[in-house]
Image (cartoon, rainbow, N blue to C red; front, side, top):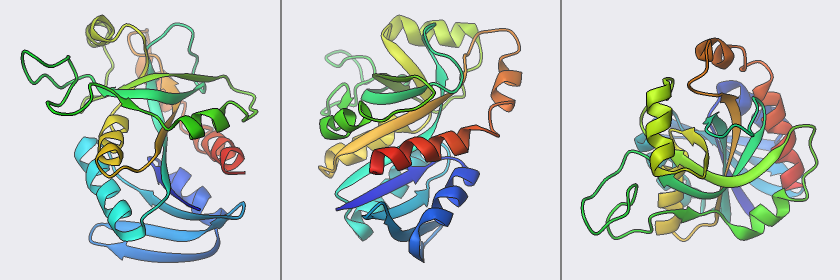
Length: 225
């Protein structure tokens, strides 16, 4: 069994790479992949870059070159629900775009001809339910778009279209779309970095980066185990 692991943070990439046994590095164009083993499972690790296009391009390269049995994407997201706190984790039961509109006959967020939402892999979601952590792990909708959401007006606009959404990021739905097209099981895991719309929102985001990579490492390591 081989798992593709796509991470967002440089420190997260470095921490995971240091854990891999018998690591082998392979460079493809602008991307660097590290193969190795962890908890008896083959791992292909990479850092995709920010935004939907970077995420999609990197996922295609990973699938075509390494053919993983499933893909897990770890990264950060803004919280869209009052029940979430900084450092909570959202497991993507569903992902969707918050910045796509293809006209009448399509749902908001739907790329015409594709599902309006992409389902996370149920087997991986069930395994997440068994992961123990000192932070709360929520299962729900993650929405993605090519904007860093910081203002209350932006937050309210997204919530008006996706009232049940728990988190907003810039990559999950793009990776989910590629995995849907290539029939590769996928799960997005997002650590809540901030809660858009509150006072001193950006300070909250800046103060988050020290602890988040270690927590991401801990949770994914337990999931893989």
